[in-house]
Each structure stands twice: as structure tokens, then as C-alpha cells.
Image (cartoon, rainbow over all chains, first blue to last red; front, side):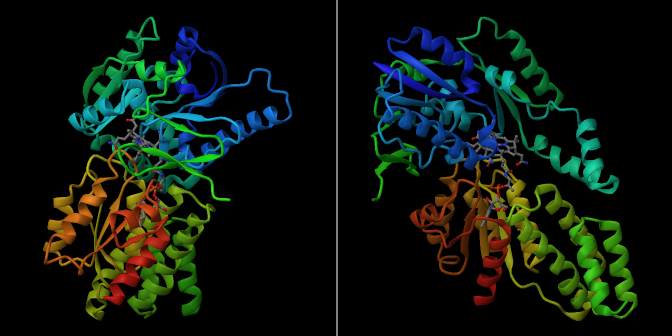
Length: 248
Length: 216
Ligand code: B12
């Protein structure tokens, strides 16, 4: 079986490692991490990548024709809603966001989310691809506000920017089996927790869901398989996503 | 400067988020004998609705709205004693909060500010608010509306719990409207859980809330 993977860069090491272990032949498109900040643009960017593959298939220039397109994404504020391919089934994990994928299952995510309310989740992939919230220097943030909105507003805007920190109780750090060393990231997460007076928890990451996805196993309860021509929709229930035949 | 110019000036400083300037001009307007009600409506609220509209159209961003709202609150503080004297009543009461398990509050705060900008009395329960808290606070304050914000699909189902709890309560059912919003919330979801109203942004949320209160 051949799979084409479209993955958020936050999974760079996990996906790279698991692709090497997969029984499928894989090709890949990496998407920049952080596009979840603008879910509409994320949706457009993902659809564009699918469109490129559809077009290459139609013009006969697609060298390796995949049996399915695999999306390494969660629902992520509906960045995946409306996606559709004319020729390929789309496979998508049934999780709210990447945290469920890092933890190996949506059920485990919900369980831990409930047990540790008010938690900021951190993963190695996040550390490697993005600025960690609350790690930025407040003085630098303030200076930027002063420049853009005037000295009289700088303190106020900084306060608004940082207020959320006080609503949080914990930092939950997820290790990853794809990293040889997790310790340095774990220490950064711990330091962040300490600085903000949060509790600190470590969870063992679990790549099994991601592996099933990249291995071409798509169990219905964990992974949506949207047939060619149909569209992905949020289902507003515990299955998270569903597909519907596109209206003519 | 005549009255019209002065009020336009207040509106314009407010749109720039210049609180000290707005306070100064509001005081000047009072000194010149302009009524508190006119200063509020044609100066402060006028400026706030311009900002709300611009935000909706992506012409300004979150910080601009925050500093404009702060400038508005600064002006309102000065006007308050005069408004009470003149008997300007609040137009309705809204209980607002972010649902249980969810700590996002930027959008919720903007909705609150825009609602206050419409002259509504807004009780803010903050983040991580349980359905029971929403309902109890609505009762205590005889509220017209419960407004729930949710940013996580993970916990968005709490909105249904709020709707169900309101419906199950003879004191509230049919009297208190439940409004819902936040990035993952849609009209389809609103209908699915039987909430009374969904809007996609803070400006239209405040319009809808005002319409509800005036209709009721
Ligand atoms: C900023 C942000 C944060 C900040 C929040 C700061 C704060 N004070 O709120 C921080 C960094 C702390 C944060 C944390 C987390 N976040 Co966050 N966050 C965002 C982000 C980028 C923007 C949200 C925002 O403020 N938008 C701006 C405001 C103005 O828009 P808005 O809230 O939609 O509000 C407007 C309308 O919706 C409407 N509205 C809002 N409320 C209401 C209410 C009513 C009644 C009405 C009518 C209208 C209305 O009016 C508003 C103004 O027009 C979104 C992605 C996105 N673009 O949506 C992710 C996002 C919501 N977060 C997400 C996640 C996963 C998290 C974390 C779990 C991440 C982690 N690593 O731990 C934690 C949450 C923990 C928790 N329990 O809450 C995911 C949610 C996925 C999901 N499960 O559904 C998102 C979608 C990003 C992603 N990865 O895909 N986040």
C-alpha cells in the first residue's frame, strides 16, 4: 500500500520515525506548525495540497499513486472541515487536536484533561517548532506594545497578555518515544511550571495511534476514512468527525 | 467647539484607545453642560461601535479593541454619578463566562466589552464556569441572558449542559435566553443543542443581546 502523508511539522520526528517503520510506502508533505492560529488559512492550505495531488493524478504526473491521503491533524478548530479529494480517500484521526495524537488516544486525552484541569500541554515537537507561551520575556512584549499602542497602554496590554497564566494550574509535559533524549525538553517544561507556580506532570507519549495511521490501518472508531468525492465535517459528538457526500 | 464636534472628538480618541484623553474630554463636555446621556451615546458608545465593526471586518485586531474598551470604561466611570442622577437605566442583564474546562477568555472579554458598550449590565463569571454557576448567577441577578463562550471542541459539550439545565428549571425556562459563541461554535451546533442564539463575533453578539433584552 502507498500512502501520501500530509502532516503538521509538530509531528516531525514522530512521523519521520514511524514512516521508517511502516509497512507502507510513503510520500509526504510537511505543513508549517502554528497554522492552527488561523484555522481558515489552515483549511485552505490543506485543501491546496490535496488539490495539487488530485491535479497531478489527473494529468498523469503523479509518480507514486497513493491508496489514501493521511492527515496528521486533529479537528484543530475545524482546520480539516470541508476537506475533500476527488480521487483519494482521506484518513484522519478522531481527536480534538494534536494532544490526543501525542497521548495515543482521544479517550486518554479526555481522561487526563478532566483529571488535570487548567493544564498547558507541552510536547517536544512544540518546543522545536514554536515559541512556548509564557516563555517569552515580558519586558520584550511590553516594549512592543509601547511602540505600537503608546506608553500609556503598554502596561495594560501586557497585563491582558499575561492574565491567562494565573488561570492555569499545571503544565502537562508529554514525552515522545521518537526522541532519544526527552530530558532537556522536560527540564524546560518543568522550569516553565516553576516560574509560573504551576503543578508539573509528565505523561509518557504513545505513538500507537499515529503508527496505525501511517501503517495504513484505519480502525473506524479511531480514524475517519472519507471516501473520494465526499467532504469531512465536524460531527459534534464523541466521534469528532464524519464525512458527507458532497452536494451536487 | 460645538457639542457635535466635541462628541465626535471623544469618539475618535476612544477609537485610538487613548484613555487619558477620553477622560479629559468627557470632563470638558460635562463642564460645557452636555448631558451625560449624550456623551455616553454619541461619544463613547459611538466610538465603541465603530471599533466593533472594524474588528469584525479584520481592519483592527484584539489589542485595539482592548484599549478602546479601556478608554470607554474610563469615560463611563466619570459619567456614572451623572447617569445615575439622570436615571439612565441599564437595558438588561447578561451573565457571561467561558464554559467548564476551558480557560480561553480573549473572545469572551471582547463580547463582554461590546455588550457593556450597548448599555447592558454584564456579570462576568470568568473562565471554567460550570453549568450550575451560570444558572445560579442568572437566578440571583434576574438575568435576561446567559452567554457562554467556548474555544475547545473538547469541552464545548458543556454548552448543551447549560441549555438543558435552563430548560429543566421552571423559574428560568422560557425567560432566560442562552446565547453561545466562540470559534468552534456554529449555527448548526446552536440548533442541535437547542440554544437560543449564536453569532460569530462580538459586535453582532452585543446587537443580538440588546435585541433580546428590548424584546423581552
Ligand atoms: C490564544 C489562544 C490560546 C491562549 C489563550 C489566552 C487567553 N487568555 O484566552 C493560550 C496560549 C493560553 C491557549 C491555551 C490552550 N489552547 Co488555545 N488557542 C488560542 C487561539 C490561537 C486563539 C483564540 C483567541 O483568543 N482568538 C481571538 C478571539 C477574539 O476570538 P474568539 O475567541 O473566537 O472570539 C470571537 C468570536 O468567536 C465571538 N465569541 C467568543 N465568545 C463568544 C460568546 C458568545 C455568547 C458569542 C455570541 C460570541 C462569542 O466573539 C469573539 C470576538 O469577535 C486558538 C486558535 C484560534 N485561532 O481560534 C487556539 C485554540 C482554541 N487552542 C487550542 C488548544 C488545544 C489549547 C490548549 C489545550 C493548548 C495546550 N497546549 O495546552 C490550551 C487550553 C487549556 C484550556 N483548558 O483551556 C486549540 C483547540 C482545539 C480543541 N481541542 O478544540 C485551538 C483551536 C488551537 C489548535 N491547536 O488547534 N490558547
